[in-house]
Image (cartoon, rainbow, N blue to C red; front, side, top):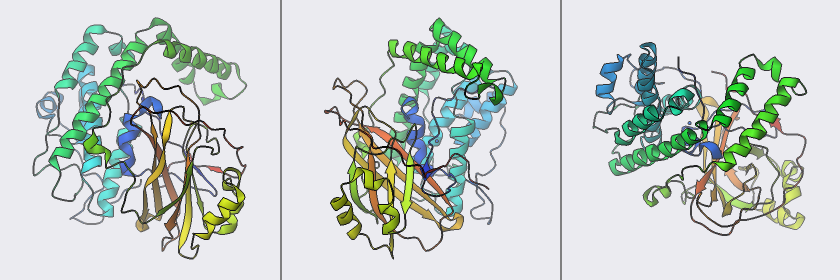
Amino acid sequence: MLRAFILGHPFTATANRAMTRGPSTAVFLLAIMTTTRSVMCAETESAESESTQRNATDIPCAQAIEQSTSLNGMELFKSAEACAREERVDDAVFFLVVGQVRAIADMSVLEPRSELDEDAAAELYGASYYTYGGAGPDDMYRDADRIAEMLRRLRSWRPSLTDGYDPGWNYERPVDGDRYRLMADYSIRTRLTQLESYRNLIQDDRYYAIQQERQEILAQGNSRTVTGTEDADRIQELDRMAAIIRSSIPSVPEPPLPKELLVHYRPNPDADFVELHAAFNGIEAGTGTTLDVFESRAEALDSWLSRVIAPAELQQLLDKVDFQHQTIVAMRFAAVDSANGKVYIREIEYRARHQYMSVIGYVVVNMPDCKEPKTWSYPFVVVASPRPDFEVQSYGASMAMLTEGCKPTVGAEPASEPDRDVDMSEAPAS
């Protein structure tokens, strides 16, 4: 099998009580596309929605190449496996990347019709992000001819969308074909810039040597990387050295999100939750997103909200919440150095079948080529959301960075971190 090199990083989240993580399918777009900034359980219950993911047929590598534009995401990933078994490594990498692109377009545009269909899309998310989220072996990226041919193939590939296309779930119709094509084109152009940036980085002999040594240490098991051990200290030193090299090698600028697609990531005017507060002086959240749900006024007052919102303002904010019918949902993001003034929650979704809640938020940041000075901030947002009619058992949270514009950045100091958050690092049980 191909050794995966993960360009994207799974989000992490914490909450004010024990929670398990279950990513919403809509998160996958920016999970893959924001890579270096930052893709559920399943069962079959009916013939009509026999999802989760309908079984992808194994297709020989050569046949899959001929049919690549019509295959769905899971079929493309299975084709990557087929090519790898035939030791056609470059073909396998091709299918790995185009499978990621097809998955992005499908999950962004082909909206599932039922919760069972949502499970099938979520299964593709999991496969795309956690199993097939890599970019292929380093030796390909260090071979100028091989990577040039790979990038040429990827630039010329676009997925087709026919009336009978089956992504692995039933979806709402009619489909906005123009939006689908825009999303596919944007996602492949974005992925290409990421791969080009990685090519530039891994072709540096110093960086390559660091990565090889790091992987050798990690391959020997977690026991060798326990804090305070010689190996753990060496990994920290390697990471420091790698960061210095990365800062000296320019990355390839990613394309801006087309204006026609931005509307799908801006604040939702039809949302049934109400924003109460948004600011940039939040609690430092480490490297990931943090989600808190407060079910009473007392919980909110006894939380980090009292550290970042003035007492009188917090009391006025809580006066707007009917805790009999609403809860407070608060998200805070890791430190951001290029936020330009907007942080918001786009979606809150409750799924009774899984007793599950997911929240998606965005912080708007400057384009990579923006020359405005960078300043650190700690974005957070607080909303009042309808209380679900079931007890939520698992939670998913993602706050992605949406690049837009070039404006003066927001700077703020973080408040200190409370002690009661619980790490949401375990995957949900099936």
